[in-house]
Length: 155
Image (cartoon, rainbow, N blue to C red; front, side, top):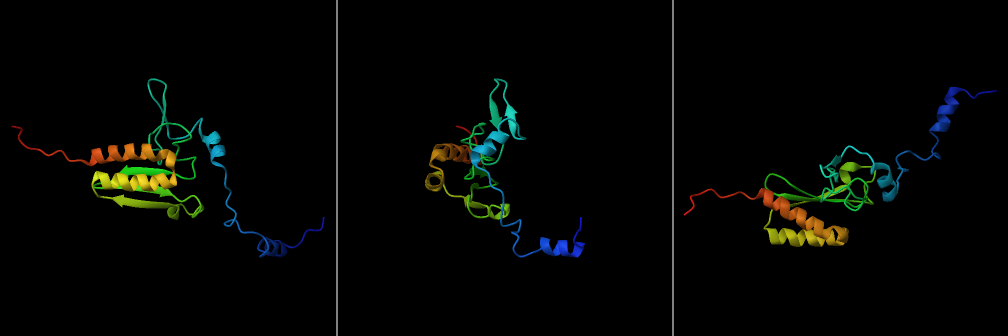
């Protein structure tokens, strides 16, 4: 067993012909990811009535299902309230797969409810048409949580 010197082995490992690790990021299908995480993950919660819920980001209804999952789908939509606005976040399925900071696009909405509903229905309708109704109901709930109740005397 005649082994090459260690210096030669390092030179072979750094050869320009070998592909870099960054260019080949392993991608799995959405269905395979769902099969792996549907039975157990950190976001699962069970109700008293034996109903399963999920607390992950990107899950508009909170239901534990493949359709609404923010973990498994490559195209996710999330609507969340901030201090004085509602933020619509969409994932970019093709760009930035290995760069999580660049893989999402956010839109801050501070307008009235009708304009926000029009924006959400247009954005989500083109991106994931099956989640359009869920996104509008989530927007309504977020907007309702941001409303300030005017205090005053009732007459």
